[in-house]
Length: 444
Image 1 (spheres, rainbow, N blue to C red):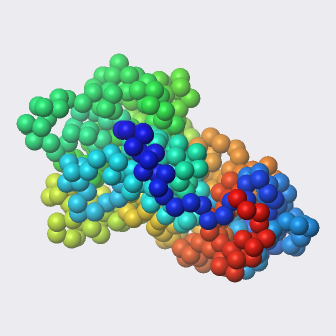
Image 2 (cartoon, helix red, strand yellow):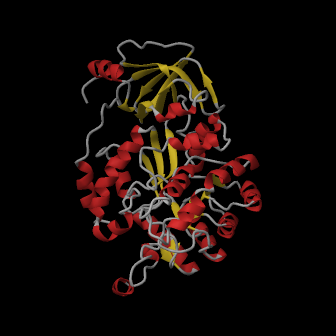
Image 3 (cartoon, rainbow, N blue to C red):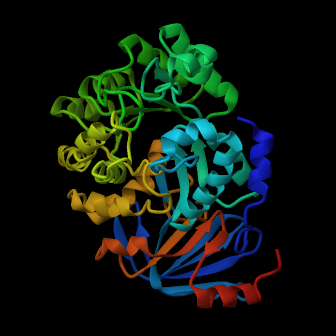
């Protein structure tokens, strides 16, 4: 990846709507979602200063003399949402497979800027990007204020085995494979314990925030199996142990039961997708405290697209039809079994900005609306290992999302986000309040 070219691409993106980082802003909420209890509480005023919630006044709307205010009295305010499984460098289409041979890194970088902004405006102030070389550079560009987007925990290149779900040469013909040579740990492909350690260290060298492994086959890779285990027990253990040395959590893409079992026993932080999760694996996850990230949206999306001739290569199509349709049922069983569930969509498979539809699918699976919202707030913060977000409270990050009405009564309200604040910056708000706040706020 060429960081300089990426930053040039990022610098051309549109600027933030309105910034209130250094100046206090009073946000008047009709009600707030308490992510600790899972309850909606009455009117509150949030006083935001320097990117943090400084005060919360309950039971009314406190006016602070000379402070710009935002009127959300017809809305429910919530902590900014977190999607724990996205791929901001790409988006599925019938051209996805051929584009890998035609597009350059900079093409993907330009696209990622728009995808990041859509994600933020949909209410997701934080994401884990689980596989993609663009993501660490996009993260840095967002942190530098060059473009708008969510806070990113970036895995960089996913770690796979030869021919595995994240082997970048799957589908190449013999001539191209001969010219390029077999990928190794630098490219995220391993075949031994030593190479597993090297691949983790390479991700550290490249500035990743989290490690992603493809513990089993996958749906969209150009390969036949979607569920076979692809790491030995020793290999996945070496990844986890080395990651621990560097303070990394490990997320494991896994559809098949045996690959999941190996990953959980090795100590991964989360299982992603989990399609063929058995009762035994669920029990083991509960014993080990392993998180489950269902990604129901991706499952439904690929199952739907598998019905369209030509959308997927023929080697992919039967996997998409078979595996995708099962994920929502797995999420329902895992919830009933008491497995810890947090929020993730695998967006990039589906269209960026549509992330909140996962809430609806979780509720359809029998997960109460309050728990679905907790999965994207306080539970997601637990997965990330951070304590300063996921809750509306003094001292926490000023990440605030608001919707009209009460999402516990009607979960579909999450599809119409009216207000987004991240680190005290307002990126989206109701039109009348945008005009009023702009008139009274200091010039940036």
